[in-house]
Image (cartoon, rainbow, N blue to C red; front, side):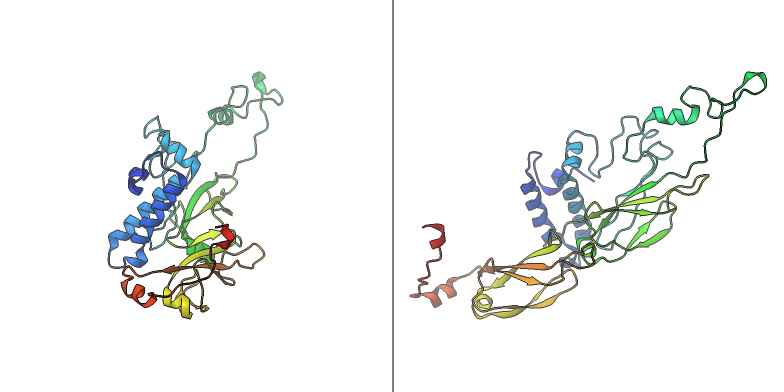
Length: 328
């Protein structure tokens, strides 16, 4: 991926607010649901989302600014391909893991040392023992010729393998199954746990690398992707809903998107901007099995041409002291 700052049209000095504002504007324009006849929009949306994901993470952003990782979040190895993430290297290659038709997919999985520090001292100690001699010849009773034969350590299990799985916001809220592609090419339908959140880690027993004592485990870290118009507030989902002036004055029933699909919402007559309506059980799941709510904030949108409205309101004035609580 290219420079995430360039993708979002930002300077490196951009604030968190600038980053979020730029992403929300671009995501609304390029969201696949609004560009179903333009396949390039889906690719562009994924690129914009990836840039936001990196820059909205303080640690990842700092690593990118220091030149430690690239625009995809992969380490920039100072040792070349033989010691980094290339084929035959020490860091383990990248594999796609999971994803969805809208462009969301896991970043990949990390093999031995993938994204983590490797203590070479511990590595050589595992091969030769603390005394520097080969493992199996330390301590124990003396054999013929004075050689010492120690107890062999128990056979190890295979290494654990880490995956990062990008999950669309709506899928995470509704706990839709996610398909994960493991390092051996096999696929697994993953059931998201109750209380799932960004950073939740799931352990899949025996799905890691093989070893003498059995396979290691697969560790799947969930990364909930941001949405074009939904935001998360604890276990609740928030949505700013535009309504027309006639709908606000006379009341109306309007269709509202939720993470479970659209529903009809009743707007009472005389509703003003900022009024919050609650849709029960349309939020994220809690660990006890219950779900949060969706909070809908009304926003009255005036037409771009208000000349006709101005003529209708000519001579009318609202005497309500609407700024009295502000002391003015």
